[in-house]
Image (tube, rainbow over all chains, first blue to last red; front, side, top):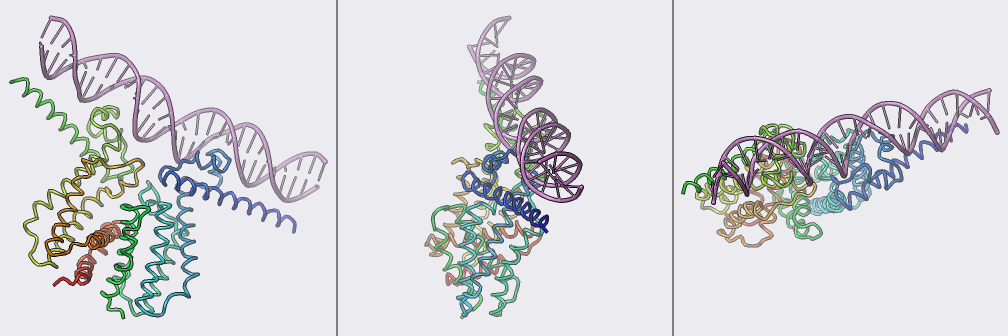
Length: 197
Length: 197
DNA sequence: GCTGTAATTCTAACTATGTTAGGTGAAACT
DNA sequence: AGTTTCACCTAACATAGTTAGAATTACAGC
């Protein structure tokens, strides 16, 4: 039916506006920081007034939530796309996982300051938007399992280690590589700890 | 002179009020979170009105700054007080440093959410209040030096590792000990990596 | 094509918060 | 005693997120 098509087009436009808002929010985040974005500023960038945003999002935190979900979706997509390239050796596989996550975290999570989200008053990612983050971690878990690393503690240690490097890099040397250069030694340390060949 | 005494007493009262404000801010932080404390709320707790706080602090961020400085001062004081108890062995010394810092970070920094400070718009610790944090790190550096660990990268790796554990613990299992239990294995991994006896 | 309906955007305004301006009263000094 | 200082006050401003309700736009059915 023609009605169906038109309704589809309407939904499409709605989705496009939504994406435009998120893009505007991200642009603004890159310029002034996550906590400093204002609804009026985002709205102006999209070409509307602040209250109109409420036709697309329930609150400012809902925008943060969508940004969070989109970032992790892109991360997951990237992980999926390089899944076949994971090297066969255990040590190399762990190194690959670390590098892939670290690059994403520094490039996207940290640059967009999404890691600061958890400090935003009242922010609590929705189940839906949290899912890709869980799925991405599952991929890492799967790589570990493939090489017989099944203890949850080892994955925890791995995430803490890489997360610590990301965080230090982000907090103490943004734009530099002081901690980025420690990634390979850190992974080797971890691999030695596991006794990986 | 008597005048001196009176002026001293006045300065004392001023200092006491300042401390009272910081205490109130900390109490409030413990209840509602760092970013959610309001000047009116803090003021009410102290028994005054919000604008009166400006007789003691230049801005809200100045209060955060003072909180930051106080927390690190206490940390440094604690470090100094246990300095003599650092075990003689290299591995034990590193373990001791890690445990001391981790406990402080989880108990005070994380509980008071002071690590979130850097996400607060415009927050930039003053030289004066940042000093104890630097001094505390210097103490760790000194311990490392004492055992021949002089490469700055190793200290960076250490701080990233412990910081990652603190952060994971704080973010993913507050109140639990899932990452706290990984502290000893992590330190052993690090010590092995350094080839410590 | 016209009309009713639904959705999107608008203006106006409310509330909360950090902050400033300017006044008041008590304590400190001469 | 008179003056000065200063901690605190009230009133108010600017900027936020958010809500209410009107206006406009896009669509569906006749």
